[in-house]
Amino acid sequence: MKQNRRYALGYLLLLLLLAALLLLGIFAGSVALEPERVLAILLGREQDTPQAQILMRSRLPRVLASAILGGALSVAGFLLQTFFANPIAGPFVLGISSGAKLVVALVTIAALSRGIVLGSVAWIAAAFVGSMISMGFVLLIAGRVKSRSMLIICGVMIGYICSAITDFAVNFADDSNIVNLHNWSMGSFSGLSWANLRTMTPVIAVAMLCTLLLAKPMAAYQLGESYAANVGVRIKPFRVALILLSGLLSACVTAFAGPISFVGIAVPQLVKGLFRTAKPLVILPASFLGGAVFCLLCDMIARTVFAPTELSISSVTALLGAPVVIAVMLRRQRM
Image (cartoon, rainbow, N blue to C red; front, top):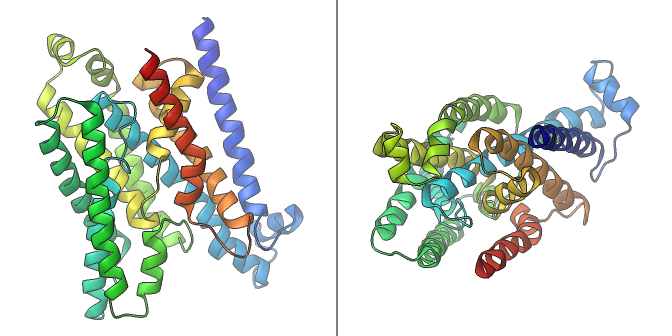
């Protein structure tokens, strides 16, 4: 009973924070919007003013996309932590986001050089291929090393290699649109549109539904492969499903916002601390809400603190997320 009360209060807190940050994200920015004017724009009473253009074409889709992508990235981190039984595993640390970034950059540059403009589906497909390639290298390394810390170090090295190749490709590409690609490669929620939202939302929704369906075998898997196998979990298909779902969620984020650091590690740990449980059925939706809250906060900081200059979103997520990772590592060291 006491635990159920904690779950209810935890979800209520996350929902209240999400609602508050959604509103702040809409109102705050280099151009402040009054609540009355925002309401008039949303009701269609004001359409052709500069404020209406800012809200409907830029700020509102950006805020919604930040929440959706932040939630997806956090869930991807939880899946990877479950798969590797490692609390600091995540898409960015393991180099999965960097692999997705590399393939998206190469495909985009090749397409632009031929006058082809890629759509959102092509970006997701390219990012998914890149994430799977990086995941393949990580799994190959995981089969050769027994140390969890060594696996993380190798993942970081893979990430650095992919990022270096991406930087070379972007810097030497000959196209005016590469400026936007460079900004994307640093991590940013800017420039996201309603068309992007219409593509990412159903993909992430389906991935989340599939993830929730795996909650029961995931809970068994957390107790060890042998236990999971004894209670009827088919280990190989289950592990493949975890890889594919975490790769797809990470790919969606990277395709639209570039690589974003520490969200996939820090948020699941914060959520576990808030709910005092690791039950997947509880933590999966909570991680999505927590990731949405975290990324909305970081994005608001990135675009308002030094407005009109905008910070890289990864700079802010690293500033807020890295201390959480350090705390987790120190706590495990004491155990």
